[in-house]
Every structure is written in structure tokens, then in C-alpha cells.
Amino acid sequence: MRGSRGAALLLVIWLLLLLAGVVVVFAFSARIESMQGSALRTRLAGQLAAEAGLEVAALRLADADPTRRWFPDGRANTFDYAGHKVHVRVLDESGKVDLNAADAALLAELMIALGVEELRARQLAGAIQDWRDTDDLLAIGGGAEDPDYAAAGLDYGAKDQPFNTVSELQQVLGMDADVYARLVPHVTVFTASPRPLRDFAQMPVLLALGMGQADAEAWIQARSAWQPGLPLPVSPEGGALAAAGSGTYSVASRAVRADGLAVEVTSTVRIGAAAGFGQLYAPLAWRVGEPD
Image 1 (cartoon, rainbow, N blue to C red):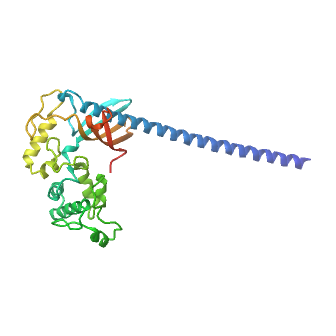
Image 2 (spheres, one colour):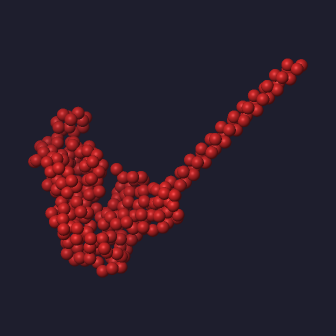
Image 3 (cartoon, helix red, strand yellow):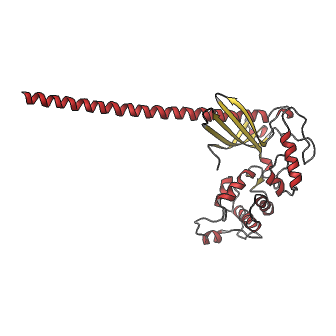
């Protein structure tokens, strides 16, 4: 009798331990799911705040009053929204070098302005030209066609078609992470213009276009000093400088919480009548997180 009672007691103890273990596992799982849910809510709130920055940028760029429009010259525009500090930077794509339209000489000058050694810059510029053109002839000054890719052990050759995205540069023979990172802020695939405009171009592009260092610095300083509501500065192209309102722009919007958590939305958008369907803007590229 005592043996049966002892066995029953042990069984009850084991059942209690098993139930306690189940409760602990359930509580731990619930805690993990709660933390995951909180993290997702926090990230979503940050993403929506960053997207709000894009909406504000589109609205300000399309303002009917030129003196109220944001200048798309890369300056930081900051405002508070839903518990976040939102930092928005806008660049006019017309001030960038188009990978599909610029000639090899301009591409090389841009890389030289970015600190790339001249011989390598001209070889890479030729490789970019060979990537997009349809012939199998090497560009003057150096380039890369299918046999060169094969000799380098790559299982693909020159695309022989236009660049669809800037990130395709990483596939061009001879391109490395350092040169790619330098180029990305100053090149585009959205303008189809052989030469960028100087109005909102950055220093390396101004130098690549043949503007002297002193003149480029003076122009950037004059442009940077302008604030909404002030008289518009005179551009290097002549006439008062103003954001076009409609056009193609790259926008980087970063939302930062008080505790330092941040979410960034980077995009390329077409604003104005060209957006179509009565929309304020049409997205051409969109990414949540740090750009390539």
C-alpha cells in the first residue's frame, strides 16, 4: 500500500514538473513573440515616419511658389513627426551623370574628380561604355568585352544593353567596392541626358564638367546659403535658380527616435505632370534600409 502511494506521489511530482516546464516554455515563447511584435511595431512606425518625409518632400518640391520649394542640392531638411526626428535630403537627378547617355570622357573625368587614378578611370569608363553598347569592339583607351570577362573567370560578359539600375555597375569588369561607393551618389539612369546640369550638381560633377575648383566652391557656397523665402540665387546656367517643381529626384528620408533607433527610406521619384494618373509623384526606385 505504501509502495503504491509512493509511486503515485512520484507520478504527481513528475506531472507537476512537466506542467511547470510547459508553463515556462509557453511564457518564454510568449515573451519572445511580444518582443518581436514590439520590434516590428517600432520598425513600422519608423518606416511610416520616413515615408512621411518623402511625402513632405514631394509636396514642397511641387509648391506653386518657387521661393518655397526645397532646393534639391542634398541639404538636410528636418522636422518632427510622430515621435521621430525626420531628416530628408533631396538631389535633382538632372545634376548627375547618366550612365547610359554620358560619353566615356565625361565618365572618366567624374572618376578622376572622385580621386580615381587617371589611367584606371579611363579604363573603367571604357568598360562602362562597352557594357551598354551593342558592338564587340573595345572602347578607345581601354574597355571590356566578352573575352575579357571570360579571361577574368566571370561566367557573364558585357551586357550590350543600357543599364537598368545603378547597381549594375558592380558587374562591370574592373569595378570594385571603393570606386562603386564613390560613384553611386553622382550617377543615374533616369535622365537620358549626355551632360548633367550644373544648377544642383555636386562638387565632383561640377569638376567633371570643367568648372574650376574655386568657381565650383563659390557656386556651392552661394547655393547652400539660400533658404526658402529669400531671393533666388543666379545659377551658373544664367537666370534665377529654382527647383523645377516637376522632374526626377532621389530622396533619402531618415526617421530617428529619441532612443536613437532609425529607419531610412531611399527612393527615386518622378514629380509633377510626368508622374501620370494625377499622382503627385511616381516611384521609380524604392528601398527601406541603407542604400547600396
